[in-house]
Figure 1 (tube, rainbow, N blue to C red):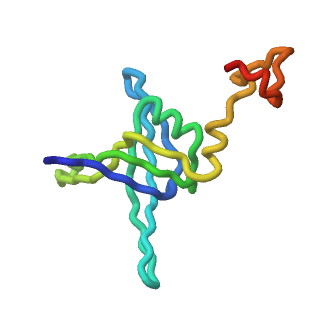
Figure 2 (cartoon, rainbow, N blue to C red):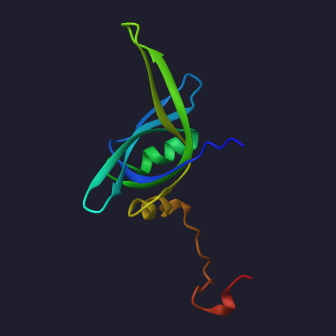
Figure 3 (spheres, rainbow, N blue to C red):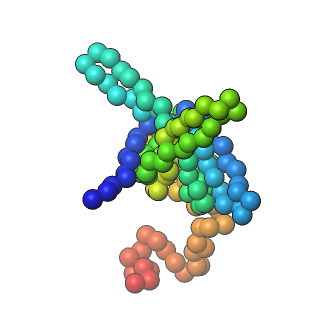
Length: 133
């Protein structure tokens, strides 16, 4: 059996960089810091992260440097050769799903004024007899 799953909770280390591929697919690149506490010490792991499409656009719209986030994704290894001929590689996490943590969750879920349903003139939300079901 092969499983490639990563679950991380941390804080954004920089603002999300949103770009688009030539075929207009959104790409969000950012980093997160994940802290681990030992008895009297704390270590920080810095992880590069990439998200695509609507996920990338939503993250870019509502998240900024320092914000907490919970992500689920998979590891990918990028390999390249430098101009000097040295081989390099680096792991990053490709986001499959994420959850807002903290204050930005409310902002992302609040409907815009035009999205709110208009109440009819005879509808009273406090009257149980007016509930339409």
